[in-house]
Length: 211
Image (tube, rainbow, N blue to C red; front, side, top):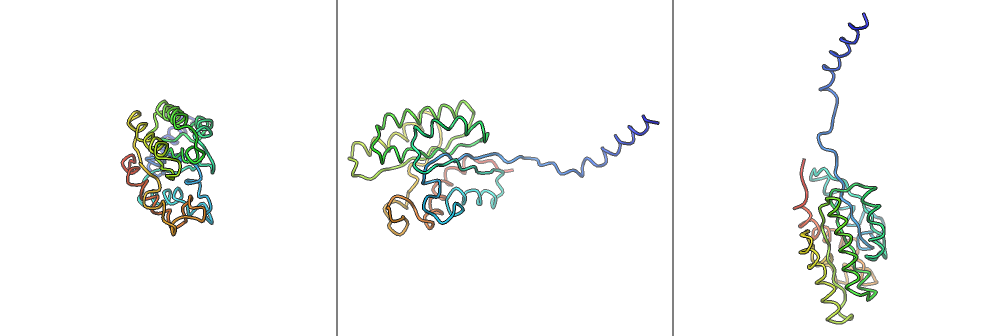
């Protein structure tokens, strides 16, 4: 009697199995690891920042990704290096958008030290088999031509060394335009966020996989 009941349960499971919704692709995670430029600094809400807009675009275009924003205003490459290992372990991303260095430059910190910190972060990303989008920056010319050029060139050098994708300048078509920047002249307004997203998207899209 008991064996017949088990047989009946088995047959029933075979009938019901196709009716159970099983997602064919679990959403992969994109980890945005940056500073105030990615943390929606000065905006009325985080939803107006380019990172949140990225999450919306991914959903609209049916890419199976979720976005985690681990950006902190005022973050330097040294600070980022101290938290990246834990962030990777916590969020298990498949793609890392690394947007750090601006605060190193604005503080006039040595370019070599910044490059060493980014090198260690890129090495950690590679060890975890992450696809990486490295985001470059420029700093105002009042820091001197030698420093500003060395600062900008370091991102290109690292992208070539680690064979990762590069956005040469996050604030392309935004920097230096008063109507697209807040009163401090450094942080983009809400109107600038879709422009920043388009700058990121052009390169990020090459790393994405659709369902």
